[in-house]
Length: 64
Image 1 (cartoon, rainbow, N blue to C red):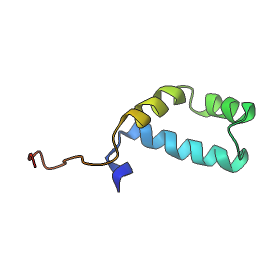
Image 2: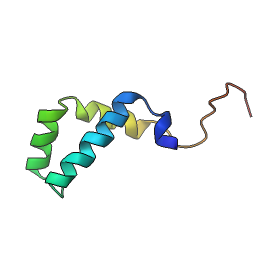
Image 3: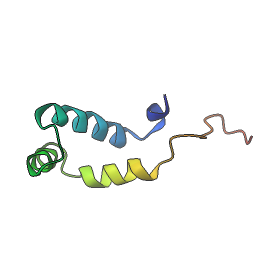
């Protein structure tokens, strides 16, 4: 559920990463080349995803 709160670019990164892991089981040079080919800005998206918290987000706009 928490991933649904992330920006679409982060979610696209997760999907592409997962699909490429089906082709390449580790983070090898081939994995990196495939990521570069399918999602050239994947590093920035990964950084955005890693910087975003996964918990304690308030969707209602109410404090507390």
